[in-house]
Image (tube, rainbow, N blue to C red; front, top):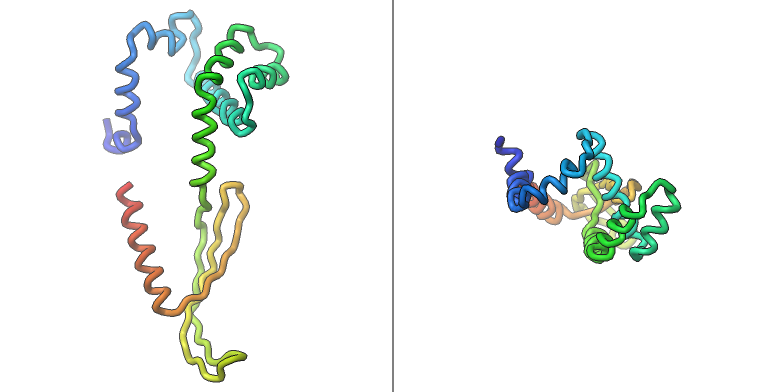
Length: 177
């Protein structure tokens, strides 16, 4: 296994799969039921279920509400499938909702652009002779919602040097992740 795959947690997933009995693994992969799905179809099923459960978590739906919502979306649902989804949501929906609460708290914007310029303040309304250099930063941040925000900051040279030092430390830490 290439080193890049190891860091992505592939070995953890494989260990989890290895803990399943062959019979359970066959049931999970739908082979025992006679249903054969190609990779794309299986991928679409997983994406649909993830989207459905995330949406149900955001809407704070109960198991019954989830089933009603699915039935409104399509009249092709077999009763057995809806019962399984109801049971899964009733057992694990609270975990999905809790995970979404944590993600909402932890979601932050992504820095996409940073511009800076060095300036010299020579005077102001309250002081005739400042003669102090400053750094002006313009940050462009994409929020999790997709909205682009611009924030500007002015710092003294000492503040900017501290900011630069902290940024380098953050970059070093992020390289280790």
